[in-house]
Amino acid sequence: MYLPSFSLKGKTALVTGAGRGIGRAIAIGYAEAGADVVIVSRTQSDLEETAEFIHRVGTKAYLFEADVTNKGQVEEIFETLDSEHVTVDILVNNAGMNIRSRALDVSDEEWETIMNTNLRSAFWFSQKAGERMKEAGGGKIITISSVAGHVALRTGVVYASTKAAIIQMTKNLALEWGQYGINVNSIGPWYFKTPLTEKLLADQSYLDDILAVTPQKRVGELPDLVGPAVFLASEAANYVNGQTLFVDGGMSIQGF
Ligand SMILES: NC(=O)C1=CN([C@@H]2O[C@H](COP(=O)(O)OP(=O)(O)OC[C@H]3O[C@@H](n4cnc5c(N)ncnc54)[C@H](OP(=O)(O)O)[C@@H]3O)[C@@H](O)[C@H]2O)C=CC1
Ligand SMILES: C[C@H](O)[C@@H]1OC(=O)[C@H](O)[C@@H]1O
Image 1 (cartoon, rainbow, N blue to C red):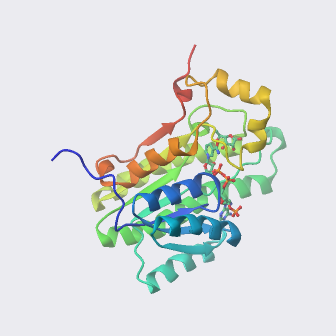
Image 2 (image 1 turned 180 degrees about the vertical axis):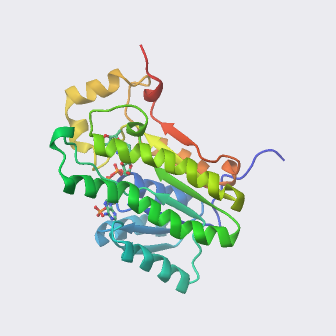
């Protein structure tokens, strides 16, 4: 039999930033693929909405209202999961944010906030999940980068630096943890309409600029991202490691 399984039945996935946007879509998509889902964000009402979708699909949702930039809260999530004998088979480091300042205007506080949210939190979750996956004999770790980590965008140097660092962190963790059956990969989206980008994409001239450098001439729809996320979390990606999959309508290959 050649076709590996794309099912996530019997697996438990932890998705950070699952209160809305891409994280919510991935969490629901994983539930539709059969997984139970641990969902993390700072807004309980958002988490409850996501959980409602998961329950309708018929799998379990574990809600954690937490700030991923607070190491104590990250540790508490894993301590609670351990105490409830919940094993994280799949980790998606999705939580992220951006403050779109020009380089000369970036404040130290902006640097800290973007770095801690986008990069440091992903490393902390990866360490916690990775040590457990090593004991369990394997797992999947997926971190959401961006085309901004691969090509220069006008959306901020600090954000771009975090997304480029994610691409390299993915390679290094794959190098160290591949021997334990852990697959560590990243997804690099171009623009998708979410609360993070809604205002930008509502500006027609900005949208025209985006479409001008996008071979598929459209921004992403959330199902376009959930498919690759399910693939990388499934057995179908058991020999994919250290890679960044750009889900970008061809934007990152756009030349002239
Ligand atoms: N949308 C796009 O076009 C693109 C997005 N990306 C990346 O995708 C990821 C998701 O983006 P998107 O869905 O658009 O963003 P949204 O702002 O729509 O959602 C972000 C989610 O992360 C949560 N979050 C943010 N900060 C924290 C924190 N400190 N602790 C816990 N949760 C947090 C938010 O919840 P709360 O604020 O309630 O905590 C929310 O649930 C990000 O990493 C982003 O960089 C990459 C390329 C393109
Ligand atoms: C494609 C980028 O990641 C995009 O740029 C932004 O301004 C948003 O932060 C999105 O993440």
